[in-house]
Image (cartoon, rainbow, N blue to C red; front, side):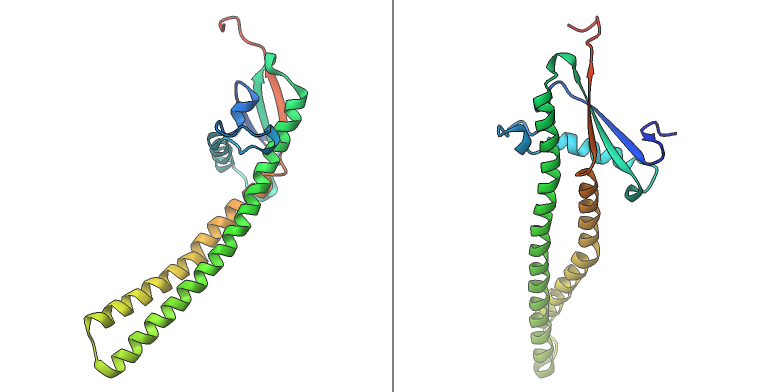
Length: 185
């Protein structure tokens, strides 16, 4: 049984960090509400979700951030929440730009494949087979294959990831503070 699944529709994702800054990219010194999420934290959240026993679209997520009690700061909590939400919102904006770029790339590939295969066909009708014709045919076929993989594989993967990030943009964020044990210094 998965202990992270509560009430059959809330999936809790616990993480433990030493301070608020650990949640974000260590090279980004902008305000907490504008920083990019630490890649390790983002990967950890994704891994937790992949382990989830239920379909993602029927779940809500709760990120539980465990911190030492001595770093508690309500103002930073608000900034961290805003920063996490902004990170996922920014990812979706970036994904929209990538989608537009992908559509342009598909159009270029299809146009190039059309030109290569048209030239291949015309030269073949006039001269017969040759090495150049073989290269034109291969180039056009490879470009068409690339178009199909962009449409059917890459688009599906990008949509799945965007749907996950959209879901994470709405997750609840809870801060818990731990008291250091007597063994720690």
